[in-house]
Amino acid sequence: MKLIAFLLPQFHRVAENDRWWGEGFTEWTNVKKAVPLYPSHVQPRAPMNQYYYDLTDPEARMWQAETAKAYGVYGFCYYHYWFKGKKLLEKPLQEILKYKTPDFPFCLSWANEPWTRKWDGMESDVLMAQDYGDEKDWSLHFYSLLDAFMDPRYIRVNGKPLFLIYRPVSIPRCEEMIVHWQKLALTNGLKGIHMVRTLGGFSIGEQQGFDASMEFEPHYTFAHGNLKQPWSRFSVEGREHLVMDYDKVWQSILERTPHRDGEQIYPGAYVNWDNTPRRGSSGQSSLGMTPQKFGWYLSKQIARAKEAYKSEFVFINAWNEWGEGAYLEPDIEYGYQYLHAVRRALDQNTKQNLP
Image 1: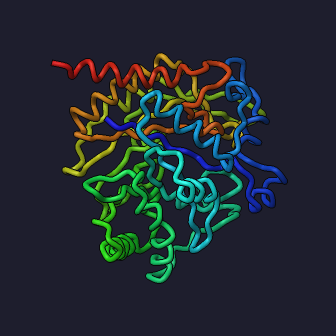
Image 2: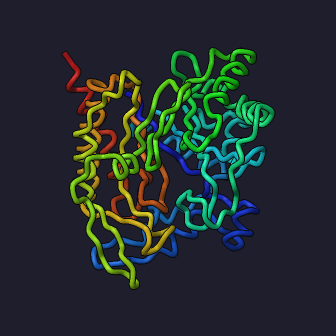
Image 3: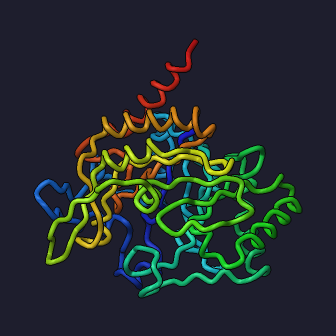
């Protein structure tokens, strides 16, 4: 079983964020300014030993990889940002490719949302718009990724590099683009690309050309799960703030049928959810999470991945989404308990399979 954790690269300065959000902005800016919105709401959350790392520092990237590997995480899925030739937050991955370290498996997820001031991918107050272009633009995008695809550390399925697209339904000619990429992959010595669409909080629709789908949690369950009153509503700053029941969401995940017309599905897992550092009272938070619960639910999801989904992967949200409360990295409240929970979940499933 291979656990792949999503990794956000927005922990270093870029000129665009300086301009949009203020000089020196990184994801830590949102994390540090967060405040509790109700009595049992834990904010701000802080990394253990005040380790507010910068991902342009190779020691930080090495620490992430060595820590993840020590507790059983198989690899990282880095978010990739591409806007018709314009890259954002690309430096950490560029340095990983250039310097060949850390020696740790990785893949990419194209977070093909417009960037907005509301952090929700909607089309209002757009900072960086998406324009998918035509064959010329698709080729430019493919060749920008080729060094990563050719890297021996890149995660593959049947010899093909695994590549996720976050919102494929937003791409007007998505199937044509995939066909074009597959031709370019073969031309450049690859066996093809293992294309995976993300099943998240947006409209799913019908897309052709994908080899598999991945259930991105908890967003997929928020939007498409059979949830029964998972939310409580608090009045905060004169507006309604939604607080989810951690256990109810996980129970809905574990009760879901994995069957979808024979399509290969990669199941997801999530550590926690609280995007109030980014969105304040208009965000959502959760109640009921403990590292022990997370580990128990993850163990069940790993077993389902093997037995029901026939999947070698479980995708975890996330390694370091501090601004959304979804992180495995050690914090001042629980230390390494999230990672110990991952290790136990893997060990429990290994023991169950022993003769």
